[in-house]
Length: 97
Image (cartoon, rainbow, N blue to C red; front, side):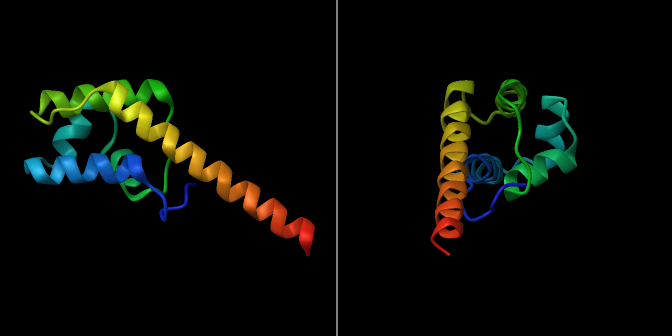
């Protein structure tokens, strides 16, 4: 489970989708993923694999939301870096205690 405090990927997807007035159902259907999965990804409670980003980018583009796989991968990597930083900080706190 991801920390929803740092969620650039999910926030980007949600913000772009909502700005375009497109439903979760429409993007998820075009991407071939479940509405629940996309919702959880947007909220930051779920992560995904890089190949899923291709599906999401296609689903967004199919619904007139301009995005690229490259943009989503960059945000995915930012999510991963934040998560690793948080895990490292937690390990350091445990070692100090």
